[in-house]
Length: 479
Image 1 (cartoon, rainbow, N blue to C red):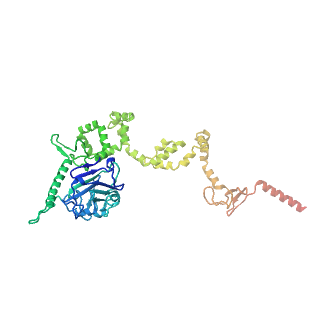
Image 2: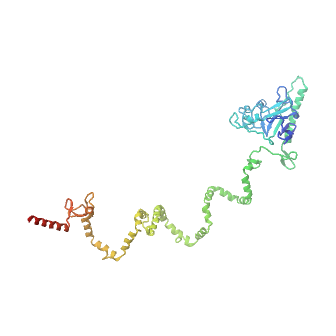
Image 3: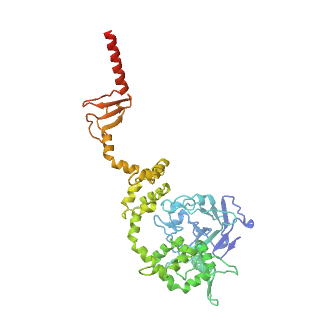
């Protein structure tokens, strides 16, 4: 916007070509000549009729440090601001030391207000630093070409009473009368301008209308709504826009929900259960499959659900056994693995209802594995033959009938390499007795136990040779 002047304000856009600021890149100045401000001789920042200036940059009030002198006047501070220590300035915790007297100045000779951009942006209150109270960051006021608007507003410093107080028997001057009249006049002007700039109630339409001069205006500073009948700001809408669009896209479904609001309330009362069901979406999805539908259909049949003969009843009757199987699931896994080595898993599953025998078999996996070897298979094959297993003539029967002699021979004879020492027990585990035989595989000699040690037994050939040698020797000796 370009320059806009009212009875009490001067709104200025220093970036518009026709209103380019002549003071230079860092200073922005504009005239207050049309605002009826006459500086007093003692204070150039206050008029003879009690007026002061208020400066706004994009709606942010720019306080000077020395404005603390006017802060007690009713209507001087912004709503919510206070001049305590620390005070509240421009809605943040700050004091007068957080700004300076050079953020803006008055040039009474040329009837101008001069704003210093650097002083504004370098101050703690309006820059990027932290205020002296440490409780709030600076407001980060900026000057951006084409968008930053500056407003100069003339305002009666203290609106709680007249600026001129006449005394009895005093000299009544024209100046005093003019100042008193101006004070009342300026208060009236402020009221008129405020009313004209306010949101007017259109009685005919029954609405509050922000339009001015047939131009739509923006409403600023609307807080987030709380009650149903409060206005909504753009920030609130933007934060919820995705949800609003989503709801708009499913409006028909929302209407359906509204029609079943009692049921929705019931669901809300069991939200924990609903959450649990939602977590079972995969399982619930299976219900719609053809196999599941067929299974569910069986539940209503007599074969499946009969209270005494149905499949469900039969399963229930062996529930205890199912639990036992679950308790020995590790061993069942072992038995399952033995099935690949030829073990009759079905037979194994029939041993021991408590799982103890199954566990024992599982622990003998190595031994059971040997059954499948070719040598063991050949031996097992012999068991079925007549020569081997005949009840009266088979090898097993013959050995069994002579088991005493077999055992006696085992007690009498054993093979040993006599290294590092001769045997001390016989084949039956008994102590060596006189006459026991042992073959020394190291010396390749048959030895017998004489009661104290194993000694050689001479073979027939050796005895004959020895006798012959003795006879020859005797013959030679006798001549």
